[in-house]
Length: 338
Image (cartoon, rainbow, N blue to C red):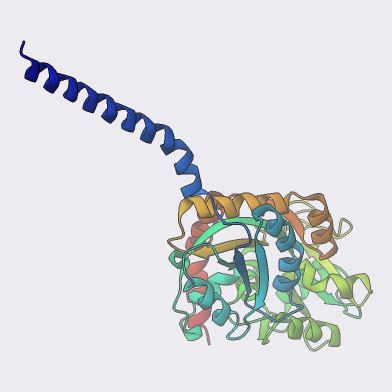
C-alpha cells in the first residue's frame, strides 16, 4: 500500500472516530436537555387565577384557600384576579381566550358552567372544548332549604304541599337555566312535583328571599346556606344525596326520607385554555392535587362548608362531557318554557 493511501485511510478513521464521539456526546446530552425543556414553570412565574365573580363570593373564598399551596408547589406567584359580570361569562371568556401557556387558570364548576354556554341568551363565545381541565378539588352537597319560620318542618311536609296544590309552593333559583333551575327541574321530574319557580340575579339574592319568606324554598350548595343555618335562620330539610353530608350530619338525605332521587352536587373543577401543552397541564394537576390533599386546606375548605374531594384531570374531563350530555336537553326544555 502506498503512503498516500495509508494517510487517506488514517484520515477517514480519525474522522469516523470524531463523528462517533460527537454522536456519543449528543446522546449523553439529550437526556439532561429533555427534562429542562419539559420542566414548567420557571421559578417565579406569575400565574393568574381568574375568579369570575366578586371578591368574597364562594369561588373567591376557595381560590384564596387553595392557591397558596399550589403556589408553593409550583415555586410560582399566583395572583387571584376577580373578573365579575355577565353571570360569570366575562371571567370565563377571559379564561377561555387566554394564552394556552398555563399562566391563566380558573374555575369551570359543574354543573353551573353548562348554563353559561348552553343558554344562547348569555352570548357565551366558549364551550366545553374551549377548556382543558387540570382536576377538581372539592364538592358541595345540594340541600333543600326553607326559612326558620316556614310551616314545612320536614321534606315530607314540603313535598306533600307541592303535590296537593301544584304550582303554589314558590322555589327560588340564582338564575334561569342555571344549576339551581336544572336541579329543581330534575327534582320535579323524579319526585313528581311542580313548583312555582322564581329567578333571582344571584345566590345571595336567592338566600335573602328564603330568609325573608319571599319564597317558600330554595335549592343550592350547602355553603350558600351554612351561615344562616348555623345561626338558626334557615332550616335544611334534606341533602340530595345517598349519604349524609359530613358538614351537616343531622340533616337527613332524600333517600332516607323515602325519595328515590339521583344524587346532586356541585364540583369545583379547575381549567386552563384548550391547547395548553400536556407537561404544563400535568404540573398544574400535581400542584392542585397536593393542595386538595393538604390537611390545612381540607380544614379550611370544611370551614367554608365545602368538602375536599380530588378528581384527576382525565376524570374531570370525562365527568364534564357526561354532565353536558345529561343536562343539555334539560336546559333546552327550560329555555323553551315561558
